[in-house]
Length: 166
Length: 390
Ligand SMILES: Cc1ncc(COP(=O)(O)O)c(C=O)c1O
Image (cartoon, rainbow over all chains, first blue to last red; front, side, top):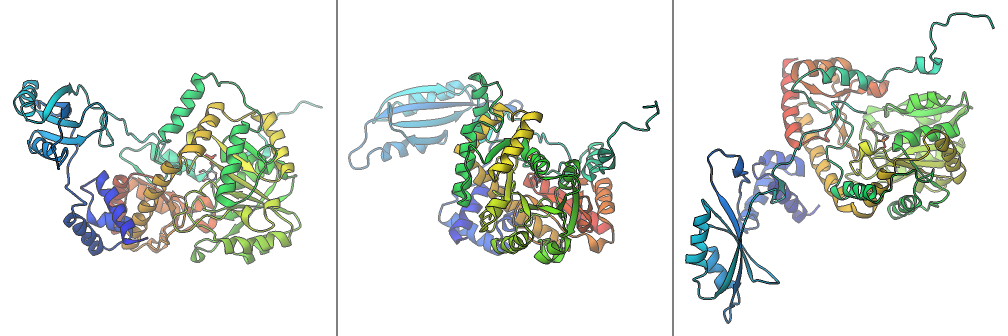
Protein backbone atom coordinates (compact mmCIF):
# COMPACT_ATOMS: atom_id res chain seq x y z
CA UNK A 1 0.00 0.00 0.00
CA UNK A 2 1.29 3.43 -0.89
CA UNK A 3 1.21 6.49 1.34
CA UNK A 4 -1.59 7.78 -0.82
CA UNK A 5 -3.63 4.62 -0.22
CA UNK A 6 -3.11 5.08 3.50
CA UNK A 7 -4.21 8.70 3.22
CA UNK A 8 -7.36 7.68 1.39
CA UNK A 9 -8.07 5.06 4.02
CA UNK A 10 -7.67 7.64 6.80
CA UNK A 11 -9.90 10.09 4.97
CA UNK A 12 -12.62 7.50 4.49
CA UNK A 13 -12.54 6.63 8.17
CA UNK A 14 -12.63 10.29 9.24
CA UNK A 15 -15.38 11.07 6.78
CA UNK A 16 -17.54 8.46 8.46
CA UNK A 17 -16.59 9.52 11.97
CA UNK A 18 -14.49 12.60 12.54
CA UNK A 19 -14.22 11.77 16.24
CA UNK A 20 -12.48 8.48 15.63
CA UNK A 21 -9.39 8.41 17.83
CA UNK A 22 -5.99 8.48 16.18
CA UNK A 23 -4.99 5.33 18.09
CA UNK A 24 -7.82 3.39 16.49
CA UNK A 25 -7.14 4.75 13.03
CA UNK A 26 -3.53 3.75 13.46
CA UNK A 27 -4.40 0.19 14.43
CA UNK A 28 -6.90 -0.23 11.62
CA UNK A 29 -4.62 1.12 8.93
CA UNK A 30 -1.55 -0.63 10.26
CA UNK A 31 0.38 2.59 10.87
CA UNK A 32 2.00 3.92 14.02
CA UNK A 33 0.24 6.66 15.95
CA UNK A 34 3.02 9.09 14.96
CA UNK A 35 2.68 8.23 11.28
CA UNK A 36 -1.08 8.64 11.47
CA UNK A 37 -0.81 12.02 13.18
CA UNK A 38 1.73 13.08 10.62
CA UNK A 39 -0.49 12.15 7.68
CA UNK A 40 -3.52 13.83 9.22
CA UNK A 41 -1.56 17.05 9.87
CA UNK A 42 -0.28 17.02 6.31
CA UNK A 43 -3.77 16.65 4.96
CA UNK A 44 -5.04 19.43 7.21
CA UNK A 45 -2.22 21.66 6.04
CA UNK A 46 -3.02 20.91 2.41
CA UNK A 47 -6.74 21.55 3.02
CA UNK A 48 -7.56 18.04 1.91
CA UNK A 49 -9.20 17.82 5.28
CA UNK A 50 -11.11 21.09 5.11
CA UNK A 51 -12.76 20.82 8.50
CA UNK A 52 -14.45 18.51 10.96
CA UNK A 53 -18.18 18.76 11.43
CA UNK A 54 -20.96 17.01 13.23
CA UNK A 55 -24.14 15.84 11.58
CA UNK A 56 -27.07 16.71 13.79
CA UNK A 57 -30.68 15.79 13.37
CA UNK A 58 -32.03 19.08 14.72
CA UNK A 59 -35.61 17.90 14.54
CA UNK A 60 -34.83 15.71 17.54
CA UNK A 61 -33.67 18.67 19.62
CA UNK A 62 -36.39 20.05 21.85
CA UNK A 63 -37.37 23.67 21.21
CA UNK A 64 -34.94 24.01 18.37
CA UNK A 65 -36.37 25.82 15.43
CA UNK A 66 -34.80 25.87 12.04
CA UNK A 67 -35.70 25.93 8.38
CA UNK A 68 -33.70 24.76 5.42
CA UNK A 69 -34.27 25.97 1.89
CA UNK A 70 -32.70 25.24 -1.45
CA UNK A 71 -32.70 28.16 -3.82
CA UNK A 72 -32.19 27.85 -7.56
CA UNK A 73 -30.49 30.99 -8.78
CA UNK A 74 -30.08 32.24 -12.33
CA UNK A 75 -27.27 34.71 -12.78
CA UNK A 76 -25.39 36.59 -15.46
CA UNK A 77 -21.79 35.49 -15.43
CA UNK A 78 -19.16 38.22 -15.20
CA UNK A 79 -16.59 38.65 -17.90
CA UNK A 80 -13.28 37.11 -16.97
CA UNK A 81 -14.36 35.32 -13.80
CA UNK A 82 -17.51 33.58 -14.98
CA UNK A 83 -19.69 32.54 -12.08
CA UNK A 84 -17.01 32.67 -9.41
CA UNK A 85 -17.49 36.27 -8.39
CA UNK A 86 -21.20 36.11 -7.85
CA UNK A 87 -20.81 32.75 -6.15
CA UNK A 88 -18.41 34.31 -3.71
CA UNK A 89 -20.79 37.21 -3.02
CA UNK A 90 -23.34 34.56 -2.10
CA UNK A 91 -21.26 32.06 -0.14
CA UNK A 92 -19.86 34.78 2.12
CA UNK A 93 -23.26 35.18 3.79
CA UNK A 94 -23.12 33.19 7.02
CA UNK A 95 -26.59 31.69 6.62
CA UNK A 96 -25.52 30.07 3.36
CA UNK A 97 -24.55 26.45 3.99
CA UNK A 98 -23.62 25.41 0.49
CA UNK A 99 -23.29 26.84 -3.00
CA UNK A 100 -22.94 24.70 -6.12
CA UNK A 101 -22.57 25.64 -9.76
CA UNK A 102 -25.11 23.55 -11.65
CA UNK A 103 -25.69 22.54 -15.22
CA UNK A 104 -29.21 22.80 -16.57
CA UNK A 105 -32.15 25.10 -15.91
CA UNK A 106 -30.40 27.40 -13.45
CA UNK A 107 -26.83 28.29 -12.51
CA UNK A 108 -26.29 28.22 -8.78
CA UNK A 109 -27.87 26.07 -6.15
CA UNK A 110 -27.80 27.72 -2.74
CA UNK A 111 -28.55 25.87 0.45
CA UNK A 112 -29.55 28.08 3.31
CA UNK A 113 -30.44 27.50 6.90
CA UNK A 114 -32.26 29.99 9.10
CA UNK A 115 -34.42 30.13 12.20
CA UNK A 116 -37.72 30.86 10.50
CA UNK A 117 -39.34 30.95 7.10
CA UNK A 118 -39.51 34.73 7.20
CA UNK A 119 -35.75 34.90 7.83
CA UNK A 120 -35.30 32.97 4.62
CA UNK A 121 -37.76 35.26 2.84
CA UNK A 122 -35.80 38.25 4.01
CA UNK A 123 -32.52 36.75 2.88
CA UNK A 124 -33.86 36.03 -0.57
CA UNK A 125 -35.60 39.33 -1.14
CA UNK A 126 -33.10 41.65 0.55
CA UNK A 127 -29.77 40.02 -0.05
CA UNK A 128 -29.85 37.50 -2.82
CA UNK A 129 -32.26 39.02 -5.36
CA UNK A 130 -30.71 42.44 -5.03
CA UNK A 131 -27.31 41.28 -6.18
CA UNK A 132 -26.64 42.84 -9.52
CA UNK A 133 -25.98 39.68 -11.48
CA UNK A 134 -28.86 37.66 -10.03
CA UNK A 135 -31.61 37.31 -12.62
CA UNK A 136 -34.11 35.15 -10.75
CA UNK A 137 -34.52 32.87 -7.73
CA UNK A 138 -36.79 29.93 -6.96
CA UNK A 139 -36.98 28.93 -3.31
CA UNK A 140 -37.78 25.36 -2.20
CA UNK A 141 -38.30 24.66 1.48
CA UNK A 142 -37.11 21.37 2.87
CA UNK A 143 -39.98 19.63 4.62
CA UNK A 144 -38.18 16.64 6.03
CA UNK A 145 -34.65 15.28 5.91
CA UNK A 146 -34.45 11.56 5.31
CA UNK A 147 -30.79 11.22 4.45
CA UNK A 148 -27.95 13.72 4.57
CA UNK A 149 -24.28 13.32 3.77
CA UNK A 150 -24.74 9.57 3.48
CA UNK A 151 -26.39 9.24 6.87
CA UNK A 152 -29.97 8.01 7.11
CA UNK A 153 -31.76 10.09 9.74
CA UNK A 154 -34.59 7.84 10.80
CA UNK A 155 -32.89 4.52 10.04
CA UNK A 156 -33.17 1.52 12.31
CA UNK A 157 -29.64 0.20 12.55
CA UNK A 158 -30.21 -2.47 15.15
CA UNK A 159 -28.17 -5.61 14.77
CA UNK A 160 -30.71 -8.20 13.75
CA UNK A 161 -28.40 -11.18 14.11
CA UNK A 162 -28.73 -13.69 16.88
CA UNK A 163 -26.00 -13.79 19.55
CA UNK A 164 -23.91 -16.74 18.45
CA UNK A 165 -23.95 -18.37 15.02
CA UNK A 166 -21.74 -20.92 13.24
CA UNK B 1 -42.94 -59.84 14.28
CA UNK B 2 -43.82 -59.86 17.94
CA UNK B 3 -44.76 -56.60 19.59
CA UNK B 4 -42.07 -55.06 21.73
CA UNK B 5 -41.43 -51.65 23.17
CA UNK B 6 -38.68 -49.51 21.79
CA UNK B 7 -36.78 -47.10 24.02
CA UNK B 8 -36.53 -44.57 21.23
CA UNK B 9 -37.69 -44.13 17.68
CA UNK B 10 -34.66 -42.07 16.78
CA UNK B 11 -32.07 -43.24 14.34
CA UNK B 12 -28.79 -44.27 15.92
CA UNK B 13 -26.93 -41.90 13.64
CA UNK B 14 -28.89 -38.93 14.86
CA UNK B 15 -28.76 -40.03 18.46
CA UNK B 16 -25.02 -40.22 18.33
CA UNK B 17 -24.58 -36.74 16.86
CA UNK B 18 -23.18 -34.35 19.42
CA UNK B 19 -25.15 -31.14 19.87
CA UNK B 20 -23.09 -28.22 18.59
CA UNK B 21 -21.06 -26.32 21.18
CA UNK B 22 -22.14 -23.19 19.41
CA UNK B 23 -25.71 -23.92 20.38
CA UNK B 24 -24.74 -24.07 24.06
CA UNK B 25 -23.11 -20.66 23.91
CA UNK B 26 -26.04 -19.23 22.08
CA UNK B 27 -28.33 -20.48 24.86
CA UNK B 28 -26.09 -18.97 27.53
CA UNK B 29 -25.61 -15.61 25.83
CA UNK B 30 -29.17 -15.08 24.72
CA UNK B 31 -30.41 -15.21 28.30
CA UNK B 32 -28.26 -12.24 29.30
CA UNK B 33 -28.56 -8.49 28.83
CA UNK B 34 -25.99 -6.06 27.57
CA UNK B 35 -23.94 -8.74 25.83
CA UNK B 36 -21.50 -7.75 23.12
CA UNK B 37 -21.25 -10.63 20.76
CA UNK B 38 -18.08 -11.62 18.97
CA UNK B 39 -19.72 -14.98 18.48
CA UNK B 40 -21.43 -14.23 15.22
CA UNK B 41 -20.28 -16.07 12.11
CA UNK B 42 -21.92 -13.79 9.63
CA UNK B 43 -21.47 -10.29 8.20
CA UNK B 44 -22.73 -7.31 10.20
CA UNK B 45 -23.67 -5.61 6.97
CA UNK B 46 -27.15 -5.77 5.56
CA UNK B 47 -27.32 -7.17 2.01
CA UNK B 48 -26.48 -4.41 -0.52
CA UNK B 49 -29.62 -2.49 -1.36
CA UNK B 50 -29.50 -3.12 -5.10
CA UNK B 51 -29.59 -6.85 -4.36
CA UNK B 52 -32.56 -6.54 -2.01
CA UNK B 53 -34.29 -4.36 -4.58
CA UNK B 54 -33.74 -6.96 -7.31
CA UNK B 55 -35.62 -9.53 -5.27
CA UNK B 56 -38.55 -7.11 -4.72
CA UNK B 57 -38.60 -6.55 -8.43
CA UNK B 58 -38.63 -10.28 -9.18
CA UNK B 59 -41.61 -10.67 -6.87
CA UNK B 60 -43.42 -7.75 -8.47
CA UNK B 61 -42.89 -9.36 -11.83
CA UNK B 62 -44.49 -12.51 -10.52
CA UNK B 63 -41.46 -14.78 -10.33
CA UNK B 64 -42.89 -16.82 -7.51
CA UNK B 65 -42.70 -20.34 -8.94
CA UNK B 66 -40.08 -23.12 -8.74
CA UNK B 67 -37.03 -22.79 -10.92
CA UNK B 68 -35.12 -25.56 -12.71
CA UNK B 69 -33.86 -28.12 -10.19
CA UNK B 70 -30.25 -27.10 -10.66
CA UNK B 71 -31.17 -23.42 -10.43
CA UNK B 72 -31.99 -20.72 -12.97
CA UNK B 73 -29.76 -21.09 -15.98
CA UNK B 74 -29.18 -17.31 -15.94
CA UNK B 75 -27.71 -17.63 -12.45
CA UNK B 76 -25.67 -20.74 -13.25
CA UNK B 77 -24.24 -18.91 -16.26
CA UNK B 78 -23.23 -15.98 -14.02
CA UNK B 79 -21.67 -18.27 -11.44
CA UNK B 80 -19.66 -19.94 -14.15
CA UNK B 81 -18.53 -16.59 -15.59
CA UNK B 82 -17.65 -15.29 -12.14
CA UNK B 83 -15.44 -18.31 -11.38
CA UNK B 84 -13.82 -18.06 -14.78
CA UNK B 85 -12.98 -14.42 -14.17
CA UNK B 86 -11.77 -14.98 -10.63
CA UNK B 87 -9.89 -18.26 -11.01
CA UNK B 88 -9.60 -18.88 -14.76
CA UNK B 89 -11.41 -22.20 -14.38
CA UNK B 90 -14.15 -23.25 -16.79
CA UNK B 91 -17.39 -24.83 -15.68
CA UNK B 92 -20.25 -25.62 -18.00
CA UNK B 93 -23.33 -23.88 -16.58
CA UNK B 94 -25.62 -26.60 -17.90
CA UNK B 95 -23.77 -29.59 -16.52
CA UNK B 96 -21.34 -28.49 -13.88
CA UNK B 97 -23.14 -25.98 -11.70
CA UNK B 98 -25.90 -26.50 -9.16
CA UNK B 99 -27.57 -23.78 -7.09
CA UNK B 100 -28.30 -24.88 -3.54
CA UNK B 101 -29.90 -23.71 -0.33
CA UNK B 102 -26.74 -22.20 1.12
CA UNK B 103 -23.30 -23.70 0.97
CA UNK B 104 -24.70 -25.84 3.77
CA UNK B 105 -26.89 -27.76 1.36
CA UNK B 106 -24.07 -27.97 -1.14
CA UNK B 107 -21.96 -29.71 1.52
CA UNK B 108 -24.78 -32.08 2.36
CA UNK B 109 -25.53 -32.94 -1.27
CA UNK B 110 -21.88 -33.43 -2.08
CA UNK B 111 -21.37 -35.86 0.76
CA UNK B 112 -24.53 -37.76 -0.01
CA UNK B 113 -23.54 -38.01 -3.64
CA UNK B 114 -20.08 -39.36 -2.81
CA UNK B 115 -20.35 -41.47 0.30
CA UNK B 116 -21.29 -45.11 0.76
CA UNK B 117 -21.69 -46.47 4.27
CA UNK B 118 -18.30 -46.83 5.89
CA UNK B 119 -16.40 -44.47 3.58
CA UNK B 120 -14.03 -42.17 5.40
CA UNK B 121 -13.90 -38.44 4.87
CA UNK B 122 -11.06 -36.40 6.25
CA UNK B 123 -12.08 -33.33 8.20
CA UNK B 124 -9.31 -30.87 8.92
CA UNK B 125 -9.68 -29.34 12.35
CA UNK B 126 -10.34 -26.78 13.72
CA UNK B 127 -13.24 -26.89 11.29
CA UNK B 128 -16.64 -25.45 10.57
CA UNK B 129 -18.98 -27.27 12.96
CA UNK B 130 -21.12 -28.91 10.29
CA UNK B 131 -18.56 -30.96 8.40
CA UNK B 132 -18.19 -34.00 10.64
CA UNK B 133 -21.93 -34.32 11.41
CA UNK B 134 -22.71 -33.93 7.71
CA UNK B 135 -20.33 -36.79 6.93
CA UNK B 136 -22.01 -38.96 9.58
CA UNK B 137 -25.48 -38.10 8.32
CA UNK B 138 -24.40 -39.21 4.85
CA UNK B 139 -23.37 -42.55 6.33
CA UNK B 140 -19.66 -41.88 6.23
CA UNK B 141 -17.03 -41.79 8.92
CA UNK B 142 -15.42 -38.43 9.66
CA UNK B 143 -11.70 -38.79 10.26
CA UNK B 144 -10.38 -35.78 12.05
CA UNK B 145 -6.96 -34.38 11.37
CA UNK B 146 -5.56 -31.93 13.87
CA UNK B 147 -3.50 -29.04 12.60
CA UNK B 148 -0.69 -27.30 14.39
CA UNK B 149 -1.42 -23.93 16.01
CA UNK B 150 2.22 -23.01 15.59
CA UNK B 151 1.77 -23.38 11.83
CA UNK B 152 -1.30 -21.13 11.96
CA UNK B 153 -3.43 -24.26 11.74
CA UNK B 154 -2.37 -24.93 8.16
CA UNK B 155 -2.88 -28.45 6.93
CA UNK B 156 0.53 -30.01 6.43
CA UNK B 157 0.68 -32.77 3.79
CA UNK B 158 2.39 -35.24 6.17
CA UNK B 159 -0.46 -34.93 8.67
CA UNK B 160 -2.93 -35.54 5.91
CA UNK B 161 -1.02 -38.53 4.60
CA UNK B 162 -0.96 -40.15 8.04
CA UNK B 163 -4.75 -40.03 8.28
CA UNK B 164 -5.40 -41.72 4.93
CA UNK B 165 -6.59 -45.33 4.92
CA UNK B 166 -8.01 -47.76 2.35
CA UNK B 167 -11.42 -46.33 3.09
CA UNK B 168 -10.60 -42.67 2.63
CA UNK B 169 -12.68 -41.23 -0.14
CA UNK B 170 -12.56 -37.49 0.22
CA UNK B 171 -11.17 -34.53 2.11
CA UNK B 172 -13.06 -31.50 3.30
CA UNK B 173 -10.91 -28.40 2.89
CA UNK B 174 -11.74 -24.86 3.87
CA UNK B 175 -9.64 -21.85 2.95
CA UNK B 176 -10.05 -19.17 4.22
CA UNK B 177 -11.04 -21.17 7.25
CA UNK B 178 -13.79 -20.84 9.80
CA UNK B 179 -12.84 -20.60 12.74
CA UNK B 180 -9.15 -19.80 12.29
CA UNK B 181 -9.21 -17.36 9.37
CA UNK B 182 -6.23 -19.22 7.96
CA UNK B 183 -5.65 -19.01 4.22
CA UNK B 184 -3.72 -21.68 2.32
CA UNK B 185 -1.43 -20.33 -0.38
CA UNK B 186 -1.14 -21.77 -3.86
CA UNK B 187 2.01 -23.68 -2.88
CA UNK B 188 0.44 -25.06 0.26
CA UNK B 189 -2.58 -26.21 -1.74
CA UNK B 190 -0.30 -27.76 -4.36
CA UNK B 191 1.46 -29.78 -1.66
CA UNK B 192 -1.90 -31.07 -0.45
CA UNK B 193 -2.87 -31.80 -4.06
CA UNK B 194 0.14 -34.08 -4.43
CA UNK B 195 -1.17 -36.27 -1.62
CA UNK B 196 -4.68 -36.14 -3.01
CA UNK B 197 -3.40 -37.42 -6.30
CA UNK B 198 -1.19 -40.07 -4.81
CA UNK B 199 -4.11 -41.66 -2.99
CA UNK B 200 -6.69 -40.89 -5.66
CA UNK B 201 -8.94 -38.88 -3.37
CA UNK B 202 -11.69 -36.39 -4.00
CA UNK B 203 -11.75 -32.91 -2.50
CA UNK B 204 -14.67 -30.90 -1.20
CA UNK B 205 -13.30 -27.41 -1.17
CA UNK B 206 -15.41 -24.99 0.84
CA UNK B 207 -14.47 -21.58 -0.50
CA UNK B 208 -17.31 -19.56 0.92
CA UNK B 209 -14.88 -17.00 2.36
CA UNK B 210 -12.94 -16.79 -0.90
CA UNK B 211 -13.83 -13.14 -1.49
CA UNK B 212 -12.64 -12.25 1.98
CA UNK B 213 -8.89 -12.60 1.60
CA UNK B 214 -7.00 -9.57 2.85
CA UNK B 215 -3.35 -9.94 2.08
CA UNK B 216 -3.06 -12.11 -0.98
CA UNK B 217 -5.25 -13.22 -3.85
CA UNK B 218 -7.38 -16.24 -3.04
CA UNK B 219 -6.41 -19.47 -4.75
CA UNK B 220 -9.16 -21.96 -5.44
CA UNK B 221 -8.30 -25.63 -5.07
CA UNK B 222 -9.76 -26.14 -8.53
CA UNK B 223 -6.97 -23.98 -9.95
CA UNK B 224 -4.26 -26.38 -8.90
CA UNK B 225 -3.18 -28.44 -11.95
CA UNK B 226 -5.08 -31.72 -12.35
CA UNK B 227 -7.30 -30.96 -9.38
CA UNK B 228 -10.33 -29.59 -11.20
CA UNK B 229 -11.48 -33.12 -12.14
CA UNK B 230 -11.38 -34.24 -8.52
CA UNK B 231 -12.69 -31.13 -6.80
CA UNK B 232 -16.10 -29.84 -5.93
CA UNK B 233 -15.90 -26.14 -5.27
CA UNK B 234 -18.55 -25.29 -2.70
CA UNK B 235 -19.49 -21.72 -2.09
CA UNK B 236 -22.35 -19.31 -1.71
CA UNK B 237 -23.58 -15.80 -1.26
CA UNK B 238 -23.78 -15.68 2.53
CA UNK B 239 -20.45 -14.21 3.44
CA UNK B 240 -19.13 -12.11 0.56
CA UNK B 241 -22.47 -10.54 -0.26
CA UNK B 242 -23.85 -10.41 3.29
CA UNK B 243 -26.72 -12.72 2.34
CA UNK B 244 -26.80 -15.34 5.08
CA UNK B 245 -30.56 -15.22 5.51
CA UNK B 246 -31.24 -15.68 1.79
CA UNK B 247 -30.00 -19.26 1.93
CA UNK B 248 -28.27 -19.44 -1.38
CA UNK B 249 -25.15 -21.32 -2.33
CA UNK B 250 -23.73 -23.41 -5.11
CA UNK B 251 -21.44 -26.24 -6.05
CA UNK B 252 -19.41 -26.61 -9.22
CA UNK B 253 -17.44 -29.64 -10.30
CA UNK B 254 -17.36 -32.75 -12.49
CA UNK B 255 -20.64 -33.29 -14.41
CA UNK B 256 -21.17 -36.76 -13.02
CA UNK B 257 -21.15 -35.53 -9.45
CA UNK B 258 -23.20 -32.41 -10.10
CA UNK B 259 -25.74 -34.62 -11.87
CA UNK B 260 -25.94 -36.92 -8.86
CA UNK B 261 -26.29 -33.97 -6.52
CA UNK B 262 -29.05 -32.54 -8.69
CA UNK B 263 -30.86 -35.86 -8.49
CA UNK B 264 -30.82 -35.79 -4.69
CA UNK B 265 -31.70 -32.09 -4.69
CA UNK B 266 -34.67 -32.79 -6.95
CA UNK B 267 -36.08 -35.38 -4.55
CA UNK B 268 -35.42 -33.39 -1.41
CA UNK B 269 -35.51 -29.62 -1.96
CA UNK B 270 -36.72 -29.25 -5.59
CA UNK B 271 -35.05 -25.91 -6.12
CA UNK B 272 -33.45 -23.06 -4.20
CA UNK B 273 -35.67 -20.05 -3.40
CA UNK B 274 -36.57 -18.17 -6.55
CA UNK B 275 -36.43 -14.63 -5.17
CA UNK B 276 -33.01 -15.36 -3.73
CA UNK B 277 -31.79 -16.57 -7.11
CA UNK B 278 -32.91 -13.32 -8.72
CA UNK B 279 -31.13 -11.41 -5.98
CA UNK B 280 -28.00 -13.48 -6.53
CA UNK B 281 -27.93 -12.57 -10.23
CA UNK B 282 -27.91 -8.91 -9.25
CA UNK B 283 -25.25 -9.63 -6.62
CA UNK B 284 -22.92 -11.17 -9.20
CA UNK B 285 -23.64 -8.52 -11.82
CA UNK B 286 -23.50 -5.34 -9.79
CA UNK B 287 -22.01 -5.69 -6.34
CA UNK B 288 -18.30 -5.47 -6.89
CA UNK B 289 -18.08 -2.08 -5.17
CA UNK B 290 -20.13 -3.15 -2.16
CA UNK B 291 -18.08 -6.32 -1.75
CA UNK B 292 -14.85 -4.33 -1.89
CA UNK B 293 -16.13 -1.81 0.64
CA UNK B 294 -17.16 -4.51 3.08
CA UNK B 295 -13.86 -6.23 2.59
CA UNK B 296 -11.95 -3.05 3.31
CA UNK B 297 -13.85 -2.55 6.51
CA UNK B 298 -13.21 -6.15 7.61
CA UNK B 299 -9.51 -5.75 6.94
CA UNK B 300 -9.34 -2.60 9.07
CA UNK B 301 -11.19 -4.28 11.89
CA UNK B 302 -9.02 -7.38 11.64
CA UNK B 303 -5.91 -5.22 12.02
CA UNK B 304 -7.48 -3.44 14.98
CA UNK B 305 -8.52 -6.59 16.82
CA UNK B 306 -5.24 -8.44 16.30
CA UNK B 307 -3.28 -5.44 17.60
CA UNK B 308 -5.58 -5.17 20.61
CA UNK B 309 -5.16 -8.84 21.51
CA UNK B 310 -1.42 -8.58 21.16
CA UNK B 311 -1.37 -5.51 23.41
CA UNK B 312 -3.28 -7.50 25.99
CA UNK B 313 -0.53 -10.06 25.87
CA UNK B 314 -2.49 -12.81 24.12
CA UNK B 315 -0.81 -14.62 21.25
CA UNK B 316 -2.73 -13.91 18.10
CA UNK B 317 -1.51 -14.45 14.55
CA UNK B 318 -2.80 -12.29 11.74
CA UNK B 319 -5.34 -14.41 9.85
CA UNK B 320 -5.38 -13.86 6.10
CA UNK B 321 -9.10 -14.24 5.52
CA UNK B 322 -12.71 -14.71 6.66
CA UNK B 323 -13.77 -12.52 9.60
CA UNK B 324 -12.43 -14.37 12.59
CA UNK B 325 -9.39 -14.08 14.78
CA UNK B 326 -8.34 -17.05 16.84
CA UNK B 327 -6.23 -15.83 19.77
CA UNK B 328 -4.67 -18.22 22.24
CA UNK B 329 -5.91 -18.03 25.81
CA UNK B 330 -3.54 -20.76 27.05
CA UNK B 331 -1.58 -18.44 29.30
CA UNK B 332 -4.68 -17.76 31.40
CA UNK B 333 -4.69 -21.39 32.50
CA UNK B 334 -8.35 -21.77 31.60
CA UNK B 335 -9.76 -24.19 29.09
CA UNK B 336 -11.48 -22.56 26.12
CA UNK B 337 -14.88 -23.35 27.60
CA UNK B 338 -13.99 -21.96 31.00
CA UNK B 339 -12.53 -18.83 29.50
CA UNK B 340 -15.53 -18.21 27.24
CA UNK B 341 -18.03 -18.90 29.98
CA UNK B 342 -16.31 -16.72 32.58
CA UNK B 343 -15.83 -13.92 30.09
CA UNK B 344 -19.51 -14.06 29.29
CA UNK B 345 -20.60 -14.15 32.94
CA UNK B 346 -18.23 -11.49 34.17
CA UNK B 347 -17.87 -9.09 31.29
CA UNK B 348 -20.78 -9.94 29.04
CA UNK B 349 -18.72 -10.64 25.95
CA UNK B 350 -19.70 -13.67 23.90
CA UNK B 351 -16.94 -15.54 22.07
CA UNK B 352 -16.93 -19.14 20.90
CA UNK B 353 -14.56 -21.58 22.65
CA UNK B 354 -12.10 -23.01 20.14
CA UNK B 355 -12.66 -26.61 21.18
CA UNK B 356 -16.14 -26.67 19.66
CA UNK B 357 -14.34 -26.68 16.30
CA UNK B 358 -12.26 -29.71 17.21
CA UNK B 359 -9.75 -30.65 19.86
CA UNK B 360 -6.90 -28.76 18.22
CA UNK B 361 -8.89 -25.59 18.85
CA UNK B 362 -8.56 -26.13 22.60
CA UNK B 363 -6.75 -23.21 24.20
CA UNK B 364 -8.14 -20.76 21.64
CA UNK B 365 -11.25 -18.67 21.23
CA UNK B 366 -12.98 -17.62 18.06
CA UNK B 367 -13.77 -13.94 17.91
CA UNK B 368 -15.67 -12.61 14.96
CA UNK B 369 -14.82 -9.06 14.01
CA UNK B 370 -17.91 -8.72 11.83
CA UNK B 371 -19.26 -6.22 14.31
CA UNK B 372 -19.15 -2.43 14.40
CA UNK B 373 -15.90 -0.81 15.45
CA UNK B 374 -17.73 0.70 18.40
CA UNK B 375 -18.79 -2.73 19.63
CA UNK B 376 -15.35 -4.18 18.95
CA UNK B 377 -13.72 -1.40 20.89
CA UNK B 378 -16.02 -1.95 23.86
CA UNK B 379 -15.51 -5.72 23.66
CA UNK B 380 -11.73 -5.26 23.73
CA UNK B 381 -12.00 -3.00 26.79
CA UNK B 382 -14.08 -5.63 28.53
CA UNK B 383 -11.73 -8.48 27.63
CA UNK B 384 -8.80 -6.41 28.86
CA UNK B 385 -10.62 -5.82 32.15
CA UNK B 386 -11.40 -9.52 32.39
CA UNK B 387 -7.77 -10.49 31.88
CA UNK B 388 -6.77 -8.13 34.66
CA UNK B 389 -9.02 -9.87 37.15
CA UNK B 390 -7.60 -13.33 36.59
C1 LIG C 1 -16.89 -22.61 6.34
C2 LIG C 1 -18.36 -22.45 6.16
N1 LIG C 1 -18.98 -23.15 5.21
C3 LIG C 1 -20.30 -23.04 5.01
C4 LIG C 1 -21.08 -22.21 5.78
C5 LIG C 1 -22.55 -22.18 5.53
O1 LIG C 1 -22.90 -21.15 4.65
P1 LIG C 1 -24.34 -20.98 4.03
O2 LIG C 1 -24.97 -19.83 4.74
O3 LIG C 1 -24.09 -20.65 2.58
O4 LIG C 1 -25.09 -22.23 4.20
C6 LIG C 1 -20.49 -21.45 6.79
C7 LIG C 1 -21.28 -20.59 7.66
O5 LIG C 1 -20.89 -20.18 8.72
C8 LIG C 1 -19.08 -21.56 6.97
O6 LIG C 1 -18.46 -20.85 7.91
